Length: 136
Image 1 (cartoon, helix red, strand yellow):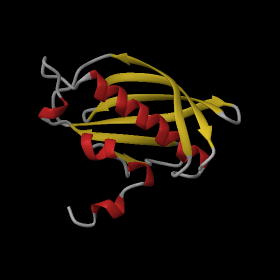
Image 2 (cartoon, one colour):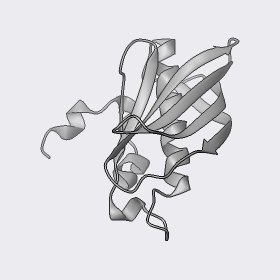
Image 3 (cartoon, helix red, strand yellow):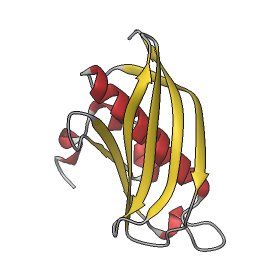
Image 4 (cartoon, one colour):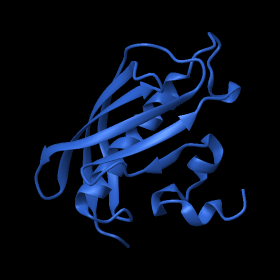
């Protein structure tokens, strides 16, 4: 779609977004989110959303939440660790990962996220530790 790139958050300007097709957004001033319209290319051999994509969406939701928390969506943040709990599968529709910063110090931050289907059904959760890095 023409002009769509202008609407992207700075963190969405990546090869990963182009390849997978997710979109990051800021639901409010305390969270960050990442959504994906599930297509056949996102499904595993069992016909459900592949766990790698689930993890990627949760990771991106956490990072987006942290950037929002820092007040700069272009901030440099990197994942130190992430633990994903898979609860249910999704086969179609839009899924959204929403992250919230829960604590941390100056450079390490703790974040939680959940992935939900359009109907609100909980699909997965994550806890993560991110490092805030200086921009180069």
